[in-house]
Image 1 (cartoon, rainbow, N blue to C red):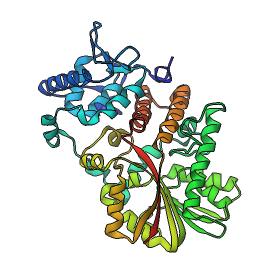
Image 2 (image 1 turned 60 degrees about the horizontal axis):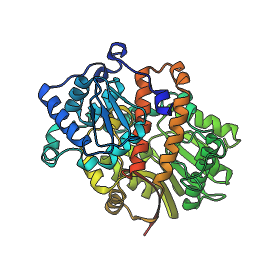
Image 3 (image 1 turned 90 degrees about the horizontal axis):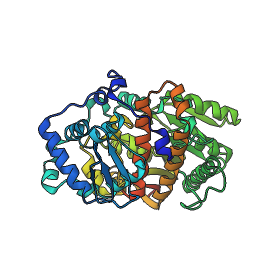
Image 4 (image 1 turned 30 degrees about the vertical axis):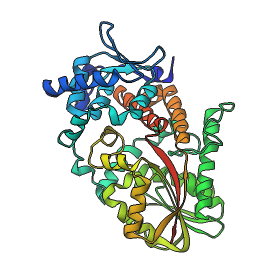
Length: 425
């Protein structure tokens, strides 16, 4: 049994809480759009190396034996949701149990590799008329950012501890090679790779004894702790109350309370001067409207001669431009208000508002795919404990879909992750 199969609990609309999951509990949409979705979907999968099994044994797709098999349990609901919501509806139909797949990551990887060709060009030109817009409540103002971060990172420290490693690091690890074997326990391998990633960032930022380091986006404190152990004076800020609580406790347990300060503070409200600044997978949560504000603030806070080390998920510039006005499944259910930048978008923002330039770029997207696979395996193995924390079957399917969706993006090359070093020109 695969980890995906192990984690999949078949959700039925009769068991879904409509108050918690209103757009999952019922399939709503016009019959016309549902029929268009059916025609487009059938045409798309006929060209792809997947197989789609419908009730009654009828199969679609060009996939050979061994290809990912998507089993559609409720075609009427599936096509209704797909027609009404596009990719959001596709994800919601999985949450509702309208379809399943034993190799969910493999299926989503095929779709990610062919994302530009799934919809015929004439319909793509009408895309702006059909896609949903971002809710105003997701805007990354100070209040909006706190709400958005709370919806994800304040779920439960205990929940994240179930699938992260002992470092509690929730970003891509850096393995010795992307093909590192599993000769040692996956958690130990992942912890080593997370520390390797952090140490590389600290090296890029020039963190050394006596250095004044600012970290924007504390996470659960591992980078701040390792910087403190180098002899740096660290100020780290977060807007997640739950993360600050655990990070401060971990700092104290490491004996660094006098050297590392953990603050509940928006990056826009930080003052001072710092020899080094680090920020790990924070840019994605800033929101396009505030990229210039974010980078201008980094420029203002960096002392002369200092360096900035960022780690960020990226995607090709044309995909960033295509996504900027589109409300996606990830934004609706996982990371409200965010947008993944391209390196070009970052360079443009730096050029508009700062004297900073990218002086080094290190890409390691295949390592993120491996990181996500380990997280997924651990999440699936501990789903009973997730349920014990009060999360329901739809939540389990949502997180499985998210982890597989993200892994597929990196497997397909649709997504990348980069460590960027910024210095003043």
